[in-house]
Amino acid sequence: MRDDQIATLAIASILGAGVLGSYVPVVKDQLSKTYDHWLQIPNDTRYMFYALQLLAAIGFITWTIHYCTRPEPYKSGLFSYSRAFVPILITVLLLSAIGWSIGTVLHARRPNKGTAALTSGSLIVTALCSLLLLAGQLESETPVWYAILGLLLFCLVTVLGDGVGWNSRFLLGLRKK
Image (cartoon, rainbow, N blue to C red):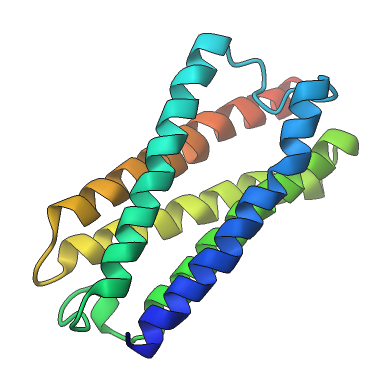
């Protein structure tokens, strides 16, 4: 494995576990009905998102395995500019995902413009990083279908479900107050 692959795998493993851990207070709030982090989205829609979130996680893992087992560095596209690009991008993506969990819990407890900006902004950064991953994979000299599919599933949730869908509900709630 190359240094960039080792770094990517380590970052994805450590910060990926951090993302999962950061959801513990969110799930606790949701189960105890302390705060509705789903923002009154109906149950049937939530179940659809649960399925999509599972597919997104599988997609991200699939892409990560593909990236970390690729024998040659990328020769074209975003991933070819620097071997540090992907590890940095994964770091920013996963830290911003953690930022959403922290922001939404803080906002639930003490709503203010700062926690609202952290919550909303973290989803926007996550969405942009997800799109950059997809673009980098599509620009590669040998795009692999399962890596692209994995990132498409990931982007479906991070860009459309969270970045647009959840954020629009959150911002709508802020405007109503």
